[in-house]
Length: 132
Image (cartoon, rainbow, N blue to C red; front, side, top):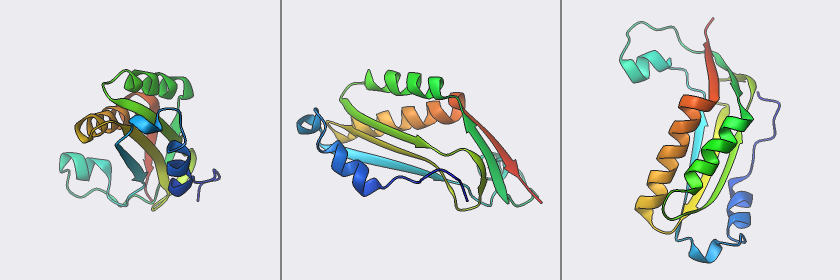
């Protein structure tokens, strides 16, 4: 299990609803990425006969994450973002990341979450799947 404290979504939402832009927010979405047993190559690319994943080594570039968050804030209707990333050696079932995003209307919030999670996964993190 990871050494970092896992955040409480209830606490995050309570804090978000007290933020300076809370009155402009009509929707919040959350993302909780989790280490899975199925290899990325199997799930994303259909590669057969992949070994089961037993864990993952995960790290991230904090400055790049902050840049991704700043970029997402420039999107229409996005008023609140909070991100937590785990690090180190993780086991199947461990949380990799949490993202909370709030905005004015559903299409804007969905687009913002999709953009931010994609940016983090593609440009800010290093994931190395572990197998036995």
